[in-house]
Length: 494
Image (cartoon, rainbow, N blue to C red; front, top):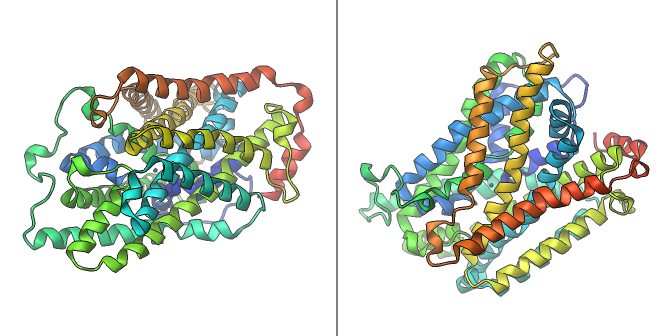
């Protein structure tokens, strides 16, 4: 997530390739390792998570670098070996290495994480729009809930018509929603400090590590795992490199460097101008822009920046709507995992019933923004649940990779990850640790009920990651299979 912040809009274009669920057995056009690095950067990097880390000031560098080493790199290298040896994406990797039911669980979790992802993404959009209309609305739960529901159902309406217009919007997301605003934010930040203004967050060496106040002081690192998600989606391009063994690692290290710059520098810029105790997790980016624009007397730029951020986010949402649900549909038609009512397509060839069912749940979740006073708290809870569900995919992927290296050592692979066992163990431990830490409330929640937080996060994880997928597996019937229809969808989206 990403397909990555899939990712979020950050992982949208890559998510389509992953959600389609396969790698075509045809000669892929060659690409340079620099091109692949840029593609990976565009699918992972985003500004949406910047306020979350800006709370920690200079320590955000540490909180970004650590998960990049223990999660981002292992995910990239391990998924590259899997993608270069087995068609079918994460479903086939897990099905071959473990079992078909667990393969379905992996695909389901890729789809299910979007149920909580959409409300958190659209809450960010709502707060961005608020800074154009009335900044006070950014902390209004009812306003946020209404925006989430209106934008989500509008997205369903657009996606159900099979439009291709969203592809162009998503492809420009990196430029108009990340690179330009991010660069502007950093430049304004440096000019602000260069004019002798004090940073709102201490920038001294003794603040390089986050202050230790118990596990709660490190909880925000969990969000970075979702920010880095989506690397397994770009691994499908490894066979397009001339010399994968050398060029893919080089490409990934360059991508990691660029991603870290895009994540770290804007987060620092936000921390320079917005005090941590005033920072909103949903509206933090616009808070920083507003503060800089007011200082430099260029407030007229606020609406332009807001439009760019909103357009990129909505483009990402529309692409995610089309991707994971279609991947789930294909696998279900092949294996009979979903009932026929959810496998039906509308006149435009879109899995409308799946989108509508997902929308009903998304609407119910959106209403929580209206019922819980603190919008930032709701945003954080949903982000954690999204991460928890998506981490199941990575746990399964790392185990499957080790099993496949052991069970099928001679299977042709275009790329063999160095020290695969070490990479998988590091990735497994990091993912498991992130899941555990995710149950610890952030120190920002103050006197909020710890057990209520654990109940919501644990309940969301249990319901989406265990109860529902195994319910579908238990209820599945042979007559629900329609391999011919699945093959037709695959041919149509090739």
